[in-house]
Length: 507
Image (cartoon, rainbow, N blue to C red; front, side):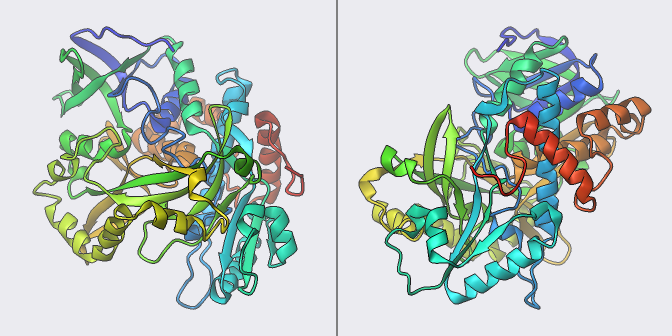
């Protein structure tokens, strides 16, 4: 990847992207397709792209389509299943697939085999109450064509064929059930991000700078932004001026948003959550499992802690992970500082932070207990999903950091939210992305929303509208409402991405 190692004292840009992760890569690629003459400067504090939240070891990589994540389908008070979020996320992932397929057809990305593969998505539960929930969830989801072909079974022999490790040695006196969606995928968002930046680095007017910390953000009288940065090794200081700034720095976005001083950022805080995986080291065990098997999260746990026994493909190698195990930390980034949380406390967000903290004391206790878990306790949690697991076949790996959004709330003072949120200035000259899951999988939809908010006039122009339709054929239409359109775009993206097209294909 071509990068610009020497930065002038002052440089000019139309767009400044802070953070070299999947969000900045997606926005940069979309903007260069929409307006090729844009000057874009990318600033990253680490020495390579996608080294934090977008990296394969730090990201769930599920290709979140809401096929298997039970937390996206909560049960309502009346006992019915709310599929609203699941449908929205599933449609968003289909939109991401369209954009990736467009880039591949336009020779803007390398072949897809190294970043996306078919891996069945499954949900697995045990106990009468949970089995009943899963059955009702299946019925509710399959009423929508986005989830057509999702299989459900309580048959032990069928479950053994779906997930042999999960069923081996299991007490069959307890009722069990699972759903299966063969259209599920595993996505290496680190590889995808680096491929995008590789292409961006070759484009005229794009400059990538690694190893730079953003020290200050200030809006000038002419409404342009002055971004003051410092090289982490040489300590040299520089300034980048831009018409538009996007802060896509993962957990580091909140401190930078607060530095910008925009009124829309007031009251926002962040609650950091760390993660760890158990990684299988036995090739014979890895070979027996090819699925993403998700279960129900423990009571009081954050959504990112939904347990799953997960087949992954990382750097061309098949892996098997279990987790993640959540934990509490004051760092906002894996490569961050323990002072990140205390330094994020400001006068305008202190009350929301304290209010959310008081309300979520059980969550804090849960995270602290997770940190204190012994190796035997972690393996015991694994054995709920793989009863015959041996501790010598697994080792602990540190996963990424997530910063959950805390925002002002008139009723409660402050609320902790799980999801992603775009915070944009009133004039559209600066935007920041806060939050975590489902994040990367819905990056394209998130960036479309950002473009519509920050570039409203250009997005309504004929040229941009036509280009958006070229990049994303379903743009402006609802895949959730149009089964014919869904089948059409899903068939096209499956062909381009090298994925199976029909739900009854064998993996």
